[in-house]
Image (cartoon, rainbow, N blue to C red; front, side):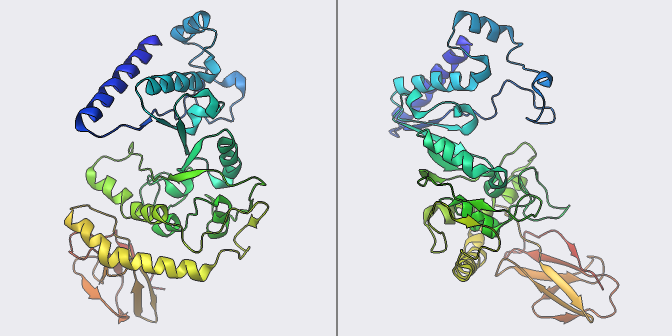
Length: 371
């Protein structure tokens, strides 16, 4: 609708004016564009065409617009909108438009007048995402890797029914999994991770030059988040692993090499270098960085410990160094510090938990099997 464009024009003008007044140039503007399709999803995109409800096609406003403006294609309404918004940005001197790939798929860089157009790429690797990456890049767009199977933080940290989050694209996104994500060589991730259901992947690097990867972005979608504490728990410390991957390229990140095939047994990724790099990162994270989060009152997720009981001896550890581990043999009524393997012989139940260095944050409780 024309009124929508007038709203966007005023919004851009006002935001640009605030930036100018503050002396902070506004060079880039994100217009959205996610999932703007002429379909009500129902069970998903696999619905037959005759079952798609086509809400845009049934809209009187869209029907009238199509009659008046033959460039208006209801089936590609997101593309129409993107091009119109892009012209508004250019008229206000904004040099770059950013968007989720849905809004730009079906167009090419030449359709836009801003010098730069960047895309948040959010296809999963195991559903053929590498082909989508190549396709979007070939159309001239800069790519911001935003892959849900590695970089969505509304997913659980680990596979456990007590861990909150969706799992439509990944059953879990742990700190380690985020850390191992190789943004510039997408196929490589098939060697260091599995698909959503825990199955091995086989991915071959397409026979084209490496796409133009501008950066990576972590996403914490908030529709299931109700408090600041829940948000902080989902975002931190995973966001620090994103920062680590974004600021430099590690020695274990391999070059984009057309024709090279990766799977969990390909043996191409130097695992020793990856382990050393992660060990250094997670040590700095646990011993140096999360105490800073505590001072900022950021209620980050404290990972629960892993623990086993063998012949009456409790052995436990934590994935986050410098994190305290505690155990209880009376159902959580009292807790003891854990430092070394300890006898719990005679106990009928054992619980373990981890605690932040300041003692204000706890992990979830983990019952340990007595077998």
